[in-house]
Amino acid sequence: IGYDHRCSASFSPYDLSSKNFAHLTAAVLESRGIPFYLFPEFVATPLVPFATTAAKAACGIMVTASHNPKEDTGYKVYWGNGAQIIPPHD
Image (cartoon, rainbow, N blue to C red; front, side):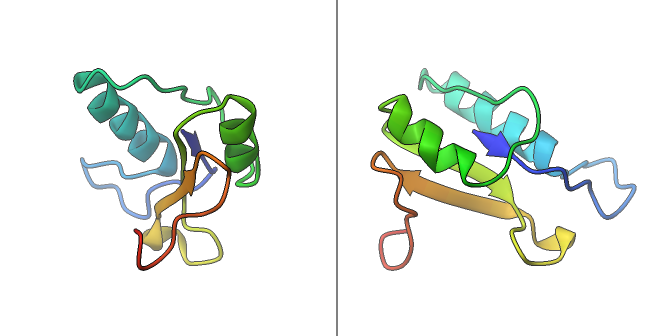
């Protein structure tokens, strides 16, 4: 699980920064007994699919708004081969 440097757009008590979104993702996986690796600091998006294949993981998750405004933070999910999961498979 990787995340970018974007911070929450508001001062809401629900901090939805990329970092916190990534930590929430990790907490959900942990609660289900699913093994994961959470990068300790923000990373560039291409590092996640690279690390996914290098670690032979089932999938990779990147929390980022990509080229969109920071309010649009979401997931990019990658197959074990590093290819991004896109419609209709997402």
